[in-house]
Length: 446
Image (tube, rainbow, N blue to C red; front, side, top):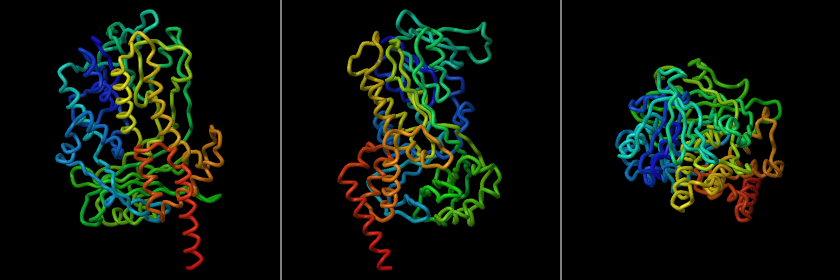
């Protein structure tokens, strides 16, 4: 392969560029934001929100950038194992689980170091500009058009490539570009969630000496009751707490710092009350909203041009409270690597790549949307077997409160180390039933 073209310099785009650098003589990233800075990119409005790198994301980053996790830690990121991760469900702390590792830092901190590693590859370059369509030759994509920063439509330029990767995010215009050239757009599935979340920094002291990350989740509310705020506290670089609150529809948090503190103080999980009461808020509250989860199902297409793939949010963008975004991007990159190493012809549609990515997407989509469908304001689409899945999930989560092994299964699935099918294996279901019987027995004895 002579030239590979990556449209977008997001984490997904950077990971794709790293993979492609092993297969192409030249890799070109087209990105509107300045990738030479260490700060937040204007094109990523959620850049200042909490980003915790799930265990599988860390494993994949270390695969492609050996020593990166240690570099992140040496520069100030916080590595959290099970002993320092405190999980709460409806205010009840779950049993601790070990054997995995999370990386907590601000997204600019992580992305900057990944970007440095990618751009240090001799065959990777960046062009600043806005992608303005795909270039087609016969039955394949042969490049893309872009507008250099500051240029008008008359300054439109074209780039040739043997493979084009769409990494332009959840707002990707890939479907429109395909339809304009006479191809079918991949079906777009959306689930409206009306999520809003707010993040604030606090100075870190000695208030929570054995905690680096704390998570607070709530089960479905009783009829007529409001949803409890979800929350994450993560220690990040600079000796700070980064605190996130999230809720839905008309209960979404605002920029008001007093409201933020009050909402933290109302959570049943003690770490949130401690930080709100004892730590100084640093700066303003940043808010972000997400209208829907969405996925583009390339597997439902009958025909597709050669020389084109998509990665990251351009394939699927999930409810961000589950933290799957960066880990999914790293797994998409590994799918791309497997596809290229297989020797598949770039003159044929990349069906094998999309089949592999669909496994990753299906797993993450199943996990996030099942939780979303339990929300009172979400009205589908409901998958087959949803009623049983919802009934069982409620009981599974209840079992994680008292049974360490059930919680370990939950942690493995959430961290994308295991497929969600593990949740419904007969051995798991038996374990859940045993845990619930134990809870009933304890309640009777009490």
